Length: 287
Image (cartoon, rainbow, N blue to C red; front, top):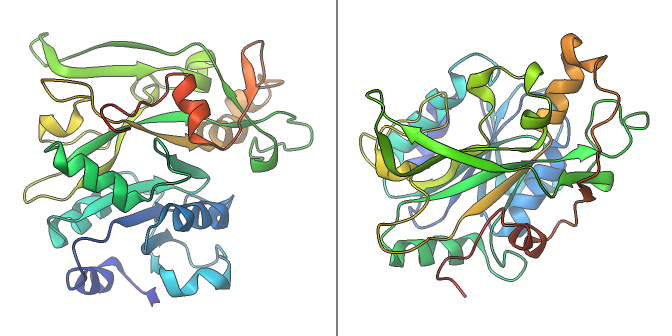
């Protein structure tokens, strides 16, 4: 279904069942948008909302499960505003948000669905899942000058680290860290400091008063934690070509970067176990 604005979509979303996880895909351009939708379908999302310009084409085969919403996701603050609007309209519903050319992975996702995951998270009395944004990039920039190549995707197997996240008064936030790595770390001279983090709360349960900031953190601090007070919880990963696209599109970095691959580059295998083996997500108590 096509909606001319987000308000029309919200009216319909507010009447839907709250036990079906919803995916929001924000189109910054058309690259790999169909692949992102297809991946979300494989994970078990019954409803996917694609917000972006109408000229970005999608596979007609997905039409029955995809809502197209005319929306300019490139305007500053537009993504957080849309997420907040959907959150307010659908309290209690699990929501995943991402951009085109991004792919959600969670432990055992080849054999377990997104509904299985959120059911488990709810039994642990958690309302959010921390997602690490793992940069993907083309192995051959001559063949793929925009850096996007799902069939030749590479990632870093090393170079990730975390620093304490501090409050405005300098005290560390409980169970919160700022995570870094990937292309944003290796080419940090081309990335503004505020955009170098690779952590995002990309999967959460909507609640009254919950609001998302432009830094991908929520106003309710417990949503931003990586674990409960008693043990580690399941985490997930969003494997993303977004940094590669930006570094190749920006005139200030495009001609300074000859290749993305380095000694610790490995081919991305498109499976959850690889991410768990590298410590980029963990099952917590979910076996």
